[in-house]
Image (tube, rainbow, N blue to C red; front, side, top):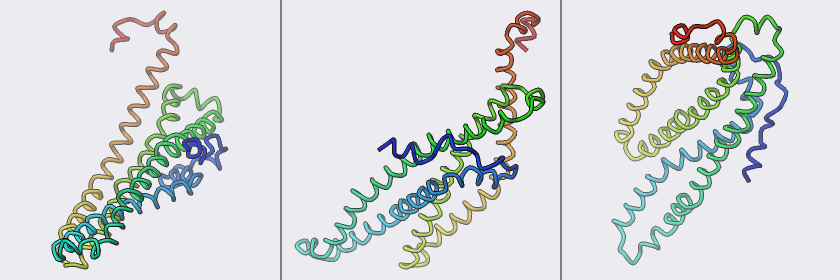
Length: 244
């Protein structure tokens, strides 16, 4: 079973072209090579989010039935509802969670990440010699190996957080609104505040993340190049200079 999910993406597929410079086009350059996989991830995330919102609603209906019918008529009045809840809680939701984890932990975390690593290496190794003379070898290697993880985690985080929150919130607002619009108002206000928070913080996070990535790559490049040329460092370097 695991090998099936591991093989959904060809980890050594040839790149469709040179990676573009724009953020959205750069994402799409890699995502389009596994668009069926990410479409399945979105669908499974959608189903799980809807179930998260529907279960409390079904529990509310069950409580209403239990409080309004005699004990001997409980199974007659709520039998179908109990079967639906059992199917959701014991079958559909666990299977959906397992499928979601398999897609994330095997198809994406293993195969898709390896695909990005391989194509980054394929692209960098074909650059002219002057390209490598103008930068630290360790910094280039760090960039090749670092790109896949943020790319993968940002997409998965979007499905887990933003997508599921949007679906869960929209479903909850719809269910509460059918009972009384005042019940849906607090969640609607929360959505507006959450959207405003994202609009304020995401641009700042983007700038800080870029600066952090640049600094981390530069440090990794210097450390790797120091160890690569350790004979020269030991021969001509001084201990006080190494410590600074």
